[in-house]
Amino acid sequence: MYQDDLIASDITAYLEAHENKSLLRFITCGSVDDGKSTLIGRMLYDSKMIFEDQLDALESDSKRVGTQGENIDFALLVDGLAAEREQGITIDVAYRFFSTEKRKFIVADTPGHVQYTRNMATGASTADLAILLIDARRGILEQTRRHSFIASSLGIKKLVLAINKMDLQNYEKSVFDDIEADFVEFAEELAPDIEIQAIPMSALEGTNITTRSDKTPWYTGPALMEYLETVPVDDDRLAKPFRLPVQYVNRPNLDFRGFSGQIPSGTVKVGDRLKTLPSAKETTVTRILSGDKDVQEAMAGESVTICFADEVDTSRGDLICTAESPAEVADQFQARILWMSEDKMLPGRRYLLKIGSKIVSAQVNETKYKIDMSDLQDRPARDLALNEVGVCTLSLDQSVPFDPYNEIRETGGFILIDRLTNNTVGLGLIDFALRRAGNIHWQSVDVNKQAHSAQKGQKPAVLWFTGLSGSGKSTIANALQKRLFSVDRHTYLMDGDNVRHGLNRDLGFTDADRVENIRRVAEVSKLMADAGLITLVSFISPFRSERRMARNMMDEGEFIEIYINTPLSVAEERDVKGLYKKAREGKIKNFTGIDSPYEPPLDPEITIDTTAMTADEAAEKILDELKAKGILEA
Image 1 (cartoon, helix red, strand yellow):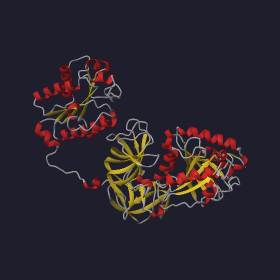
Image 2: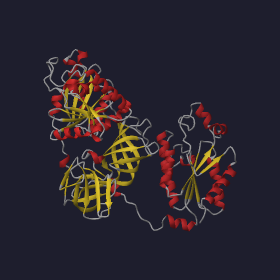
Image 3: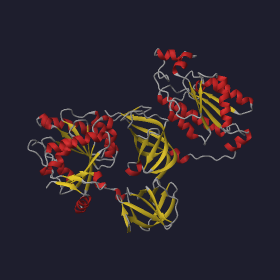
Image 4: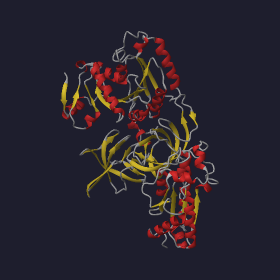
């Protein structure tokens, strides 16, 4: 019967009654209007499901509504699903839980819109199988290929090719055969071991959804639900080495210290020898708690708290492994990245990288190539745009434990986060650690920064001048350097134009080149600071993220951002080099302030208004500010 106001206790009773059934996680994906909501509605309606509900209700105690397939209106169900999916486009993936007499299912209903490919990747990351819908009238589209590639890359080896809307093609066998043949040819490049089950169907009419239809007498394969209820679920997580990403350190009192998280792979028993990474310290398991109950063993999929025999330095973000087969630890690796932001991924720019529960600073060093979704061929690339997939190398500010994604999903995947907006901008799958990550070590030296600083009788500092072209940065920096030189300060001036004659002569003026330009200059500035110098850096440096990156490379209080605040109209009126005129005429592309953005500092240490003072007056003001900040004290 139809059930209203199903409460949490009923859900618990339901789950207990069906706990022995196997669970299949699958995703529905494809291009826009291929019929995903209609298909899910038909599956729920025709399969006489026992119970259907949103996963968030299972995770909370909110009241929900259960449905019996035979007592609901199919059109109303589909309309409701479509409405929820449209809402989910801007929020998240719509997860649904339902069960038949033979199996339990969790389905991730994802939007087909190109701009929300990120939602599809989120759903696919935990799925065992993908249902890829194709409109029989349109055949294989670019979004079809993109979703297939992402599903395959995320480790999905079973794929249902749901060739939908066959009723609009009079159930012609040749239409089905042609689409299947085209996809099989394409899939040969995806993965050698991918399993494809092609099914002709009409989600609207219910053709080949729960039982094979006489409308397709030429089709001898299983109906969709028949296939989903019987397809083997290859859960090999138990056979893999034990891993536990630490999500929480539980220490309610001095007598108890446990490390909590969900086990992605392997098993653990009391008495097992474990290793924590990145510290590489070993210890023995003394207790395993599942909730508040002591157990002797735990396995993949379970959330547990583990207690150690020794006081081992372990914190949130660390990885607990079996001592015999630990994960790798590195700060540089190669990864496949799906870019999810409308702002391009730029090599040299720093992002936050979240792997497990650990967050570190990461820099994309280079894009080796991107993958063309039309033919899966590698194409040269320096950056990645929205929904593009590329193979890149990354450097982290500290080593992290990981496994290659193809070996253990949960410890080999990561996300990239924009440092300014805190938005997720990329999904990454680790291939391997770079060899140099393990072979290059920091060389300790006896004459360090402090020794250089003491010898020169000054504090090292990086004075970073930023502003539009023509704002007066170089003129003011030059005037300031002369004053510092006159009082026996050891300085060096790096000017944007001068550096581009040598160190950065290979770079142009695209956003990617500008990011790399500043990255190199920041690295040199750090070396200058290590030598105990006061370094004056005069660069437009248009992006806040790169200026922040440079700041973060220096010691606290060592980076002084000096904003030469000159309005565009004033800088353009000066136009000493005639660059603005050429930019306005279209003779210079990517010129800051004209067709390339400049992001003013939000909170600089020093601001100079060049419309209110001369270059010499500005230099004197900066000198006074440096004295007030203690930079010029010995």
